[in-house]
Image (cartoon, rainbow, N blue to C red):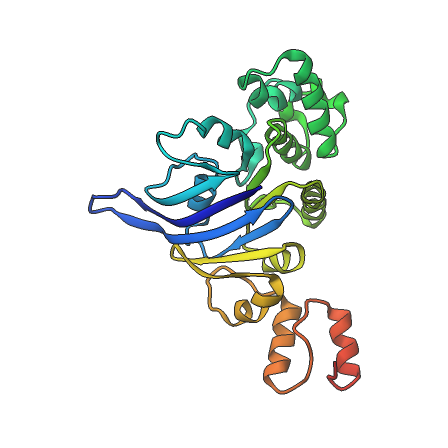
Amino acid sequence: MSLSVKDLSFTYHAGTPLARRALDAVSFEMDSGRWMAVVGPTGSGKSTLAQHLNALILPQEGKVTVDGMTVTHRSPDLREVRRRVGLVFQYPEQQLFAENVYDEVAFAPRNWGVDEGRLEVLVARSLAQVGLETSLSSRSPFSLSGGQKRRVALASVLAAEPEYLVLDEPTAGLDGGGVREFLSLIAELVRGGMGVLQITHDLELALSRCDAILVLDRGRVLGMGSPQDLVDPLCRAVLPGLIIPPVLDFSRRLRERGLAVPLTMDAEDLGRRLEKGGRY
């Protein structure tokens, strides 16, 4: 199974003096069980792309295909596409609205027509997937900690049993421990076979966690490939808002000065290489 985008283009306010091209012939494919990062400056089209993937925005030009179902205005599969592709916005805890955690997590499958018996199973499983106890079900989501709220928001998307998860800057606002915990949850979902596309400004995350990276700038694809293929081009690219991990940037500068060290984000490994005189 795969999620495929072919020559996708989109213009906001098309046909008016305010027209702005947000996506320009974007193409890529992502399989189940893979973790892809989409990186690029603010305004590069990342969020617009994310909203196309679960048919929140429908294509003006090009194609979006989810497990063989093509997304169009007249597609009979739109409902199923939106179920299969879960979308988690930035600061998802701001989307919470229900009186208790159970109703929050049950909202999507209940709207799909799932019966109450099955709902209980889905809610319990989704809470377990994000590391929350079912004892929280009767609590107001607004009484929880910030990290717990974000987990509830993720559980509410997982309850629809998506095949793919699209995350728009999901770690924004979390402290270091919260980021690590959240990414561990995502890694577990990927190991279970879910395809994950994560929009991020965090190159360290993209290079260390993801299987593939898509680089966008001004709505166009600048590059796509494995972290190993893109680490050097990303270090050299001048993309506002993207911060090169300090150790990686330092190793790049050493290489430019003729030292035979690898491009790395591992400070201890780099230190050992330097002790050996910069040899591999």
